[in-house]
Length: 249
Image (cartoon, rainbow, N blue to C red; front, top):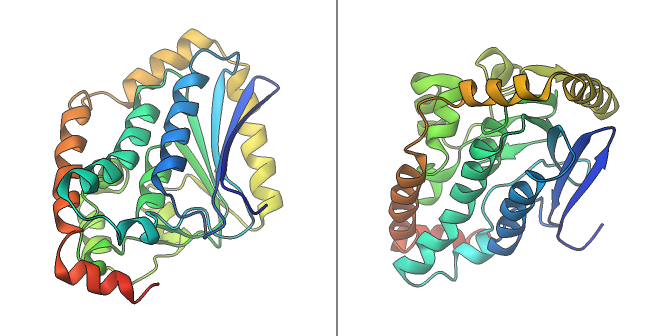
């Protein structure tokens, strides 16, 4: 695979949503928009349960595309970029279908947010996580509600402030982000398929009601994440952030 894509395939009543970008699955705006729309469109599909996964056998998601971040030159464009992750998280939240996460490798920044927005997340032992945003001059403002909802304020602050440290998959499991950690990608795929197909065989009305319960008290997230995207959109224009991003080019 060399070309960015978002795909949707259904097998045994399970809808598999896959995103891919050759740059370690870092997410530019167009891929985020396609991912959001695919999640929305899956609502009317025959799939009973969804699986969110990325292509490739290494990094799950490296977060925001630095190549796109560095050329942002005004607050409106900055906010629009960060709304990409906000819109995907809100699409996952609003979906009536349970979403299982398949995390085969490292997740950074927005990638951690995507994992946190799933309803049940499985990973391999190689799926270490990091919130590096403060180290480049911004912060994990958009994804914070989803991450805090899973791992709590204390762990969220620990990851945010220790912004250059990778936390192990076992740490993520022990603190509520991952439900299961598998030894290999093959074992991960087997566990994901088994769980997804089992859930797809359950009463669909019960699944939908459970989804509502899992996301209670998040009704304000449309406004909340919009405001958070505005904060990030301003910070990405700072001299500190621009200079730091140049080191990654």
